[in-house]
Every structure is written in structure tokens, then in C-alpha cells.
Amino acid sequence: MTHGGVLAADCAIVAVVIGYGIAHFQDHATISSQNLALSTTGQVALTESQLITAVRDAKATIYWVGPQGDTRYLLTIDKTGSGIIRYIPISGAVSSATTITRTVATYSANGAYAKSVSVSTKVGTSTFQNADKSLVFYKNADTNDVFMAFPGKNFQVEIFDPVAGQALSLAVLAGQVRPVA
Image: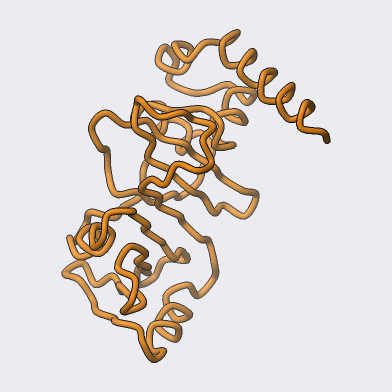
């Protein structure tokens, strides 16, 4: 696809969103399948309530670190049930791939906790359990990118925050990293 084709595709997506209106999400308890598809591709900035509805309607388990003021959320869910939430400032552009923002990724995998325990024991990695028994681990040289796993759950969660130490601060708090819906 040429660059012009990408622009045309982006314009088509914007036209669909405008046509159905973001207000549609706020006025309905569930999202239509067409709007659900749009809201889970990371191309539509969602409010907190729209995010919760989209995750619930997708029947996915996606973790986040809770709401953040003056923020919209970009949600991407793949066919495996893995998902990513990007926290976008209200003033930020949805399509800006270069904007570095808080991101929480949920990776669906059988035996995620045991696999995480194995990875967390590598040299140069710090590991601990927080009060809710979740495993928290990160490379010593990078507290901007922290991983978590929960006993009995088939998910590993990655928290990235561009502010040094913020991802680790969020992971330390028991219950801060939790399913959206």
C-alpha cells in the first residue's frame, strides 16, 4: 500500500468514527460489533467508560493501572486475547506513533506465572512479590519497563512508563495493576 493509500485508509477510519460518533459509545451499554472492532484496534481514543465497555464486550481480560486524569485510552486486542492500553493525553494526537506514553500490555499465555518465575531469576533482574502475591520483575538497568505475573492467572503484564521509576512505583502497589473490567 502506498503512503497515499495509508492516508486514505486513515481518513476512512476517521470518517467511520465521525459517522457513528463517539457519543454512540457513551449512550449504549454495549458496543456494536462494528464499533467494537474499531475500538479494539488502537485507532480510537476512548474515555474510561468506553474502555471498560470495549474490554467487557470483547470478553477479554486486559490489565491496566487505573484511570489517569486528562487521558484517553487506545486499546488493542489481538486474536489470542493479549492486549495493549496506551494512555494518551487528551491534547495528544491518537495517530502519533512517536509519542511515548504510559503503556500497559497484557500477554495471554498458559503457565504465565511459572514462565515469569523462570525469566525473573536471570542475572541482572530484580524480583519481588508485592502484598497481593503478584510477582514483579525488571531489568536492573531499566525501571521504566516492569513485568508482573499473578499466581493462578494465565497472563503476564508489562508496564512501561517514560518517567523513570514510575512503572516500578505502580507495580509495587498491591491491587494497582488490575483487570479493566
